[in-house]
Image 1: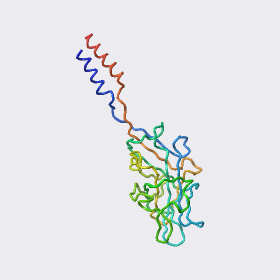
Image 2 (image 1 turned 135 degrees about the horizontal axis):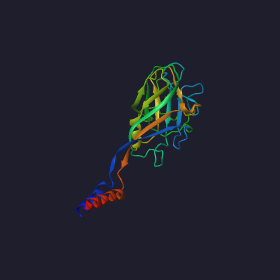
Image 3 (image 1 turned 180 degrees about the horizontal axis):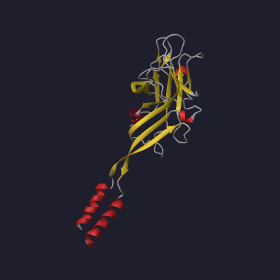
Image 4 (image 1 turned 30 degrees about the vertical axis):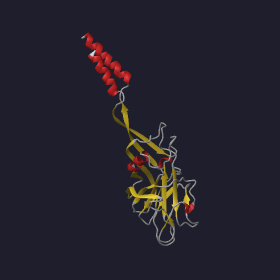
Amino acid sequence: MRALRLVMLSVLLLGGASFGVQATVLTFQEGDGGAFSETDASNFDNRGAAGSSFRGNNANLTTDTEVSGTLPTQYSMIGFFDIFGAAAGQIQLGSTIQSATLRVTQNVNTSQGTQSAHRVLRNWDESSVVNDLFFSGTNSRGDTEPLAGTDFDATVVDSTVPGSITNVEFDITSLVQAWSDGTDNFGLIIFNSGTDGWVFHSDNSATQSARPLLTVTLATPVPAPGTFGILMLGLLSVLKYRRA
């Protein structure tokens, strides 16, 4: 009888427990066949020949900083807006993010400038943002530009100097964790500290494998054995004990 009581106590203590965590890897890339991989990406040109404009259907994205002359300053925004939810293949809100990497494939690199990723603070999508009406700031020559604290968070999520490598990665673990914790997911914006353009493939690239790729590793709890299983193991132990 004492052994049976111990079995029942184990059921109460272990029935809702977990036996550690395991890594679960999810990837999101436009055109990969995933239900939640749709990606929004847009290039903003603040001094183009036709005036300031977003280019949400371009095959490439560009970052460039120009503060004099007639050349434009360009910024690029990328959004993975469907990655959170309760469905299979999505990230459940509240998940622990072990790592999150954004990989982009560069097309042209005439810039040795630092590329810095920041959290976007306003809702957008590549089909609805209208010219220079979206951003709130103005640069020294009077062009529209993103305003820190209103359009984007001034804190750098990650930065890199691309160099000659083809696939450039940004570590955005802290950003995806913030989204998982309930911060609004409005994607990210990339700035270039250099005055020569950096060009990389967008979600509209004809080369599917070159489109922006988000890889997220989750810490998924490993559930404890079910109550019934624990009880059966305990009863077998009791029977074995009595036979002995």
